[in-house]
Image (cartoon, rainbow, N blue to C red; front, side, top):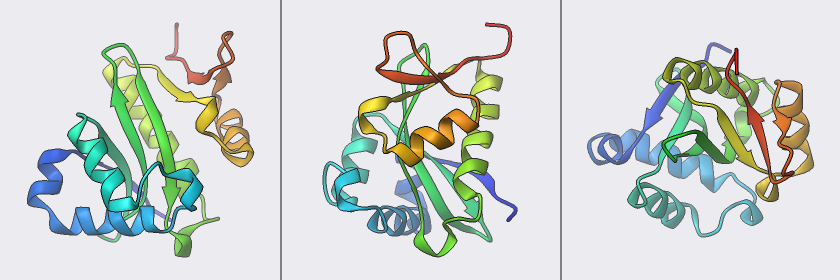
Length: 146
C-alpha cells in the first residue's frame, strides 16, 4: 500500500476540511481507552496545545495518524491509530518509518511514552528499532551516529 507522510497542524485543519474529517474518522475508530477525550475534543485540544498530527495518506485520504509534540529536543509521539478498514496492511509500520525519516532530516530523536502503549504497540516499536530508555519510561529511536 503506497502510503505517504502528511503533517496536519492547526493551519492545515483550518483550511482543509477533508483533513479534519479524516482525522475525526481515524480517531473515531480508536478504542475508547486509547483517547483521553472524544475524538473531536482530543483533536482540538491537541492542536490548541501546539501539537500536530503526522498522518498516513493513501489515495488523497488520511488513513492513519499519530499525535506529535515537539519539545525542542525530540519529537514525542502518542495516540497511534489506523482506520479499521486498512489495519493489518502495514500502514502503522510504514507511517512510523516515514516519521523516522522526517525526524532524522530535522535532527530529532523520536520518543514514545511507555505508559500510553499497549503491548502490540511496544512490540511494533521494538521491531522497528526503538529501544526502551534507561529510565524505562519511554521508547526512543535515536538518530544515526548518536
